[in-house]
Length: 111
Picture 1 (cartoon, rainbow, N blue to C red):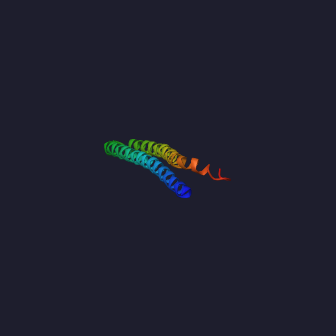
Picture 2 (picture 1 turned 90 degrees about the vertical axis):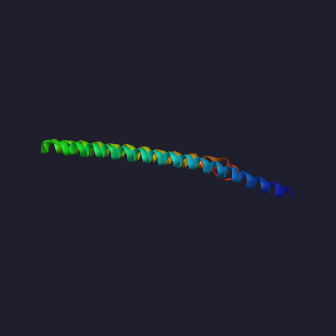
């Protein structure tokens, strides 16, 4: 009878850990989705503004300047966004793993 109680407790503990992990993952994925949507919107707006400036350029030199500025800013924005996304994914992995740390500590030789 004692073994059955232990099995039930282990099952409940595992379910609690899985639910915590799922909740953390859900929040993290939602934050990443919001970040991607914001970046996409910003990129579209900046591209549209650059296109409007290009159409209004009076000289070839001005058009090249506008295009160069746009590409420079787009590249810098992409690198910053890629860094931010990498950090978000790393944080998501760490936070999703946290509930399992206590479980792994129960096994001899784990860590």
